[in-house]
Length: 166
Image (cartoon, rainbow, N blue to C red):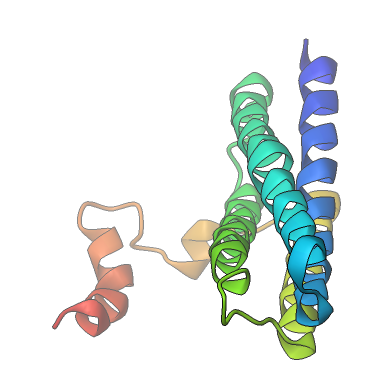
């Protein structure tokens, strides 16, 4: 059961992340197209995002969640991995918003945007691979000794909470 879930997880991650790397370059193609070619690219990009990438992302995250409980992966390095997966999810949402904006009548997407999104995606992918393969030993109590005491989380998050309040 576990090996089938791992296979599903890795397959869906490969599809999802491969699409996240390819999508900026497809959006970049919009700059030189007009007419039917532009509409064809728009249909392709939307189909890729809606029919392939988003379901692959959902299944990758769902199967990864199932693996957490099947394997009992409750260690500190896994929290770092989840933060990086959160970055990948944010990039996924950003690309989805770009799909809507780029194909507007006055929409455009430059080379710098394509390169920066691709580099951010590749950096996040490398981060996940590094953390998963390295599995660093992190002592959460050494980093935040009061974190697991009542009210400890509010002390750790106080700078963020005060910054976010109006």
